[in-house]
Image (tube, rainbow, N blue to C red; front, side, top):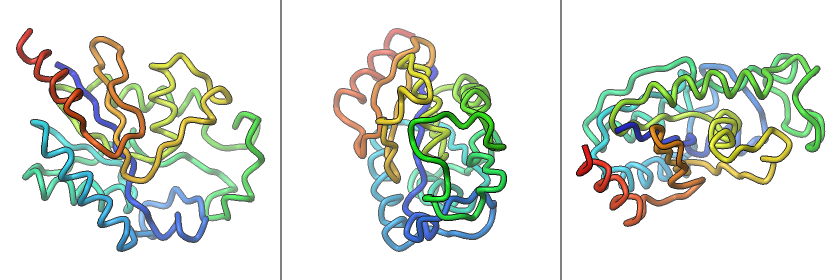
Length: 197
């Protein structure tokens, strides 16, 4: 069984200030972000999670550590889950990034293809039921592959703070997208796979 559960970090100071940043330290979770992580942890406790990996970035680590504390699982850092490389746009207001409707090519930032390559490498290396805590664009790039969408076609895919996107890696099937809940349907699907093994 290979189930990858992609969780975006909780609300952070960078979100409330409208800042985009790939810095490893700085921009911790807000009080709301901690509450969101606690809620996600309760949802994920409905499954038999066997591993948690996280982006090295503080807001993701704090989210993963909250989930790990609830589930009794040590968090591992995986560089492939990191925030986007933002080049000259790092630590700037989100409005400084060029308008929606064009690709990231030629901007001196990490390309869509580079996002997908590293994220899919992390997703496809899942074993059992794993939680992977990352960031909005990296998660969107990964789930878009399973929907056969490119960067521009996927602009409407919203990956909210502490949302859960679940992938059956072996079957190439998206089980949930940007949900705040682990549903009974998810639980039954995974139980059925376990019984087949």
